[in-house]
Amino acid sequence: MKKNLATIFAKFFLASIIPWSAAFILVLILVGVLISRQNERAMRDMVVFTSRHVAEKVTDSIKGVTGLVKFTASRLARFATPGAREALGNIIRSLIMADDQINCVWYVFSEGVVSSEKGWYAQVFKRGEDGVGEIPPVSDEGLDDPEIAPWHTVPWTTGELYLDPGDYWEYTSGVKEYVSTIGYPIVLDGKIIGTVGVDLTYFPVFDVFRNLEIPEQRRMLLITGNGIIIYSPDDAQRGKSFQSLGLLPEDAAAAEAVLAGGDSLFREMHSPFFGERSLVHILKVT
Picture 1 (tube, rainbow, N blue to C red):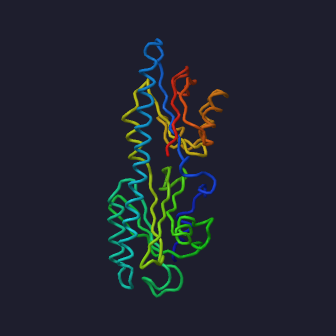
Picture 2 (picture 1 turned 90 degrees about the horizontal axis):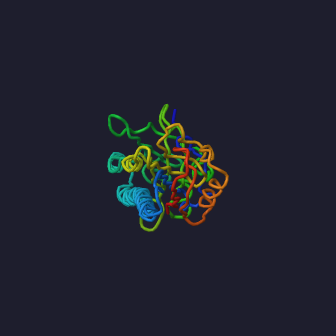
Picture 3 (picture 1 turned 135 degrees about the vertical axis):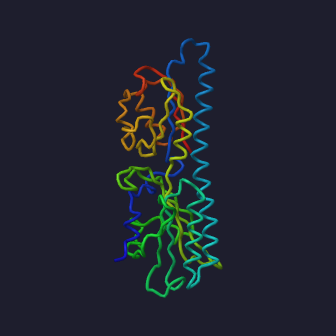
């Protein structure tokens, strides 16, 4: 029995609610830096520099994967002919192996492009311990539904890149990961003939976070535009609302203002990690 591609990739559709430019904010927390007012400016500069550095890592990772997807779409268009499925599969495998963030890749072609079967022709490839595996042929059920499969319908109908803020979910058995989806049209001679896309995780970026953290001094959080924690030094906090941090009302209001699209800010805040007032830089990742 064919698996349902739309079901495989179904996630909460947040893109219509949260613009990608405000999909993440970065919260960098330091403690013990206000020993004297003499070092306040120096420590403030260090906080801002570090948070901006991490923000650049997040945006660079997304831009890098997006570039790979666009390049792959152009390659798929060149080989999109009946009987070329092996070549198409090799292209997808090379995409997955090009970036550690990419866990799963799919392509969808319109009827008659690479197969004589009725309806959409879709294939899914997934990274595994033994390399890249191809999921058995999947059905096209739900691919025309923009609420179920926006990662396909948006690039198919608009010719534009689709990128959602993602969701925190059990991507692999027993393991919760934060996953974003990128979709892009496959175009041949000015006509859209299909779509290609990836699911990407952020573990390589989280490694950057861990390398910059200092026990008992510096801690970082990465929070989505809808307030879900996707990185915290405390694994138990991941996937929870930032409100679960127990921030003081005035501090929570300041963070919510940035989430709502306000300017980044620097302030003293009661730290959820250290239990005392700390310097905090809240920076939007755009």
